[in-house]
Image 1 (cartoon, rainbow, N blue to C red):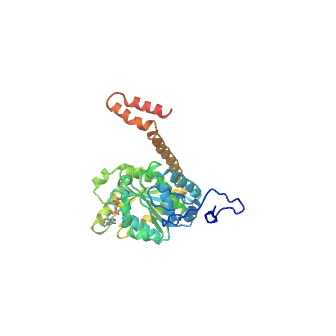
Image 2: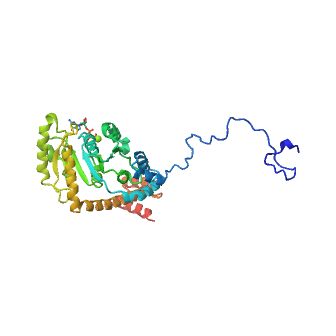
Image 3: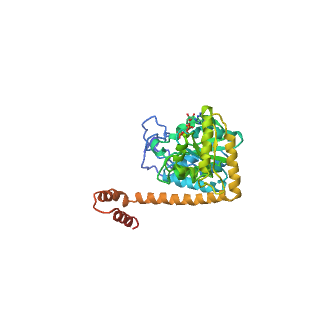
Length: 371
Ligand SMILES: Nc1nc2c(ncn2[C@@H]2O[C@H](COP(=O)(O)OP(=O)(O)OP(=O)(O)O)[C@@H](O)[C@H]2O)c(=O)[nH]1
Ligand SMILES: [Mg+2]
């Protein structure tokens, strides 16, 4: 065999007989290094961020790392969920030190404008402020509070502030879990005050009440009859009622509305033991009444801490959190059970057609589920 056909790796000491020869390659212009293909089905390797890097970044107060960690918590992918849980476990000892404040009110009451003004005031005091949102409609609309970043223009540019729009619901615990866990991350990142905004419709105000220390209801001026007709339930959740837009020609009426609220509140069950919920006025656009509201919150904190009501509420909230997550998981495991999911529509139709009772149908489903 001719010498020039020998492969490069041929062992000189071995015999001259070898079974392969080298042929000239075809030039495709490919240098063999372009391994990355930007296709839809490209397998992402190493897409999970390093937990130690995330932990360090968060503890150092890096907002971009915090944002990345929150994205992990908000993800509906199972592997992200597990990864996020590990991170939370690592950060748990550093959480719990912030003051958690919830703000609710009808659309247009001025919640975002209030947070812009109030949050900026707190930043000016030297505090770090995180703003979160619970938006019950976000799973449908894709996060209407997203638009609020523009409404909180000043605050979103403040280096002491961090604003995060509402997460959308998912199978692993929904908005409730995501917001609570985001709160823990923000606490580990050293935010002193966490403001949670929610639209006062449906169940969202109850969800937020269950995760904050101080809860305020933002309202507008109105006639006495309107106040009487207002849901008593929501007023009984509040630690303060704020009549917003107390400016211009509205100022007088706002004072009158405040007095009416105070009259009603006097007869209601207070939200926090040992604390009398009162009404206040403010103007979010003129930044009036804002320092006074902060003073009320600080007094509340001191009073509630002295009476152990503060810690007691947090303990209770943790228990409620566990229970609500159990319910979430139960629902999920039932409705997505491989035997239940395909069977459910059939059984529903049988009940609708009058062929069996609701109770019997549910009993049968549970028998199958628990097998
Ligand atoms: N005059 C006056 N207008 C205000 C005040 N606060 C808010 N507004 C106006 O009220 C409107 C609604 O304010 P937002 O802050 O968007 O209200 P919101 O409660 O966040 O509304 P949603 O996010 O839709 O639930 C805006 O046009 C604000 O400029 C105030 O103190 N005085
Ligand atoms: Mg808003």
